[in-house]
Amino acid sequence: FGLRASPSRVPAVYAVLASRPAGNDGWAAACEYLGLTRDLAAALAERAEELGPERSRFVRALSYPYAMRGVMEEEAGRWWSEVDAAGGNGARLAAGEAWVPREDGAAEAEAGDEAGD
Image: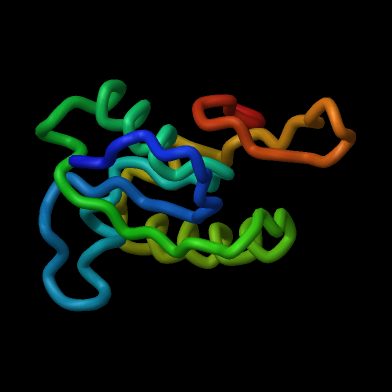
């Protein structure tokens, strides 16, 4: 994806796509993975390694100024509905990334930690 690690983490809902979407709605059928994360660059790097170059050519992402679990899960739910209706793989591959407690007691999503199977 050409992303470099940076000191700041970007929370986002994201979809990894195998091909360039045709129009605004084509992304859902091309979806290979859908998730939410507190660190978009790290999550995309992990997905690219996991899926390989043929299945991780493009990304659709909606970033947030700070992680807002409920808002992000709601948006991810809308995306999952679109992916499922279009027959994309994302809804079957990822039920969401786990929100785990940090040392300071706040919750965060760790890229790669799946919630539910």
